[in-house]
Every structure is written in structure tokens, then in C-alpha cells.
Image 1: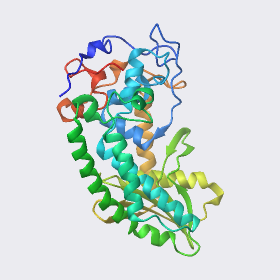
Image 2 (image 1 turned 180 degrees about the vertical axis):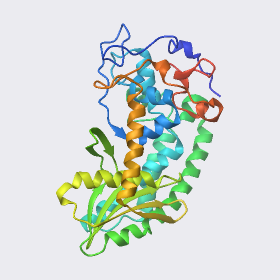
Image 3 (image 1 turned 90 degrees about the vertical axis):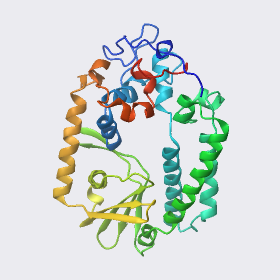
Image 4 (image 1 turned 30 degrees about the horizontal axis):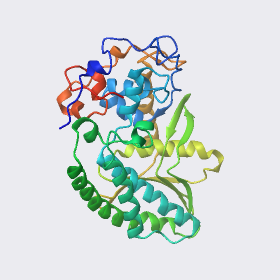
Length: 344
């Protein structure tokens, strides 16, 4: 295992890092305005997981792409883009699903299983086999991420090769299920229209900027709108799709003429489809949950107008560190009781 430097070598955990209207206020760095606030399901999920992780992800790392940012901010930005094998597999399969959807929309032949497999393998290999000294990772961790297991645990070459083979086997199963999905039968119905393919939708709901990124949105004759979400391992939450449906309907505006809206959660790992009809009552329940989440986020701000967060200490750490902290990408930013980080 690779030895890790103490956390104090990377950051000074006693400092306060927020003040004024800047997210990076270290003396050596120019003021960096805080990011614009926008609610999303993933942002809410991160806050539910750990307030401190939420802070580091959205505020502590902001501006860390700049060479003029403080060492602490650059480190947080680098850690923010650490990844896991499961996450990379999910992203790759989602890209394959988007490629199939584009082919269906354009009337082109669907890619074969072999084509899907080759693309996914190449993408997984690039990430899993990448080390911390890779020039691409050093230059741009957002475009060339490194595994959490490699950064913190020093996973060796042989173990990474074994991991790659296991992920490749899983990818083969997921691709087969993806190609056989009933979603493509629905999309092939005469008169069907694919409205969105893995496209982020930014709208204002209840006065708050909201981001929704449905994997696929189908309009079927005569009056059906279907919101599709691919799942490659985690169980998922159907309320996420209800929120997406609300956002899609708002984005379509006058173009939304369907009378029936459905949410399909497609579990590729177990060949099942979880479907629900989107009703006004379900939309309101999801909207109420979103409003409560927004309120919780705003309670952690010193200045909601400029999205300036409270002091870092106001963002609580997870109550049971042993359950998740050692698997957290921001492990090095949190506490001296955990192993620290390599220099950014």
C-alpha cells in the first residue's frame, strides 16, 4: 500500500475558508465568486449523505481548476473528481444507451453488443489503469479521473487488471439487457418521438433554478409522455423521475399536449422495469420534498442571494464516520483522524 502524507501537509484544517462573496479567500488567491445556486436531485442526495462532503464538493473546490487558486482549493477540486469502478461502469453504460437512442431517433441501425462492449472496455481501461502520476490526471482531473482506490489505497497494476476484467464481465450483462429493453420497442412505435437524450434541463421551479437530466424522454401517440431512467446497480428512487417529469413538462410548456405521463425506471442489472403514472398528487409530493431540500440548502448559506456558504464548520460531518468516510472522495479534507492526502 502506498504511504499517505499527513493531512496537515496538504491543508490547514483549523482555517476558515469562507468569507465575503468569495468561495476561496486565502491570501494568495484572488477572490473567486461562489457558483450560482441550482437545485438538483444529485445535489440533494449529496447533502443527505454528508453536509461536509456537500460543502467541499460545491464550495470548497470551486475555482480549483485555476492555477491561481489556493493549494487547499486545488486539492479539493482534484479530490472532487475521484471516481469508483461502479460509477465509471454506470457512466459508460449510460453513454451506450444514449448512442442507441440517437440511432433509433435517426433511423440508423442500432450498435451491436460487440460495438458497445468494445467502447465501454476502452473507457473503463483508461480510468481503471490510470495512475496518480499520469500527465492527463495531473493536467485535468475532471477529464481524466483516477480511482479512489488508486489515490488513497495505492491499488497496484495486477489488482487493477483483475478489476478491469470483472467490470468488463458486468458490462457485457448490462449491454445485453440494454439492447433487449422494451424502451426501444416503445420508441419504434409509428409516430413516436424522442424529445430528450441525456440532456440537462435548466428551468425555474418555485423561483429556484432547477436542473433535471432525464436519461431519455419519449412522446408516444396519442397522448403518452415517458420519462426513462437507466439503473445499472443501485436501487434508485422513483420520486427522482417524478421530479424529472415535472421539469420536462415545464420545459415543454405549450408543446406539452399529452394527457398521460409515465416514469420508467429500467433496472439493467436485474432485467426489470419499475413504472408509475405521474399524477398531480405525486408531482406535488415531489415538489414539497424539493422545496424542503432547497430550504435546508439555503439554511447553510450566509448570503442566499450570492450563494455564499456559512463557515465550513457549520457543515456537519456524517454521524457515523466508519460507515462511509473511508470510502469518501473528500476523506483528505475532513479530519486529521483519517489518513491524509498526497499533494495536489
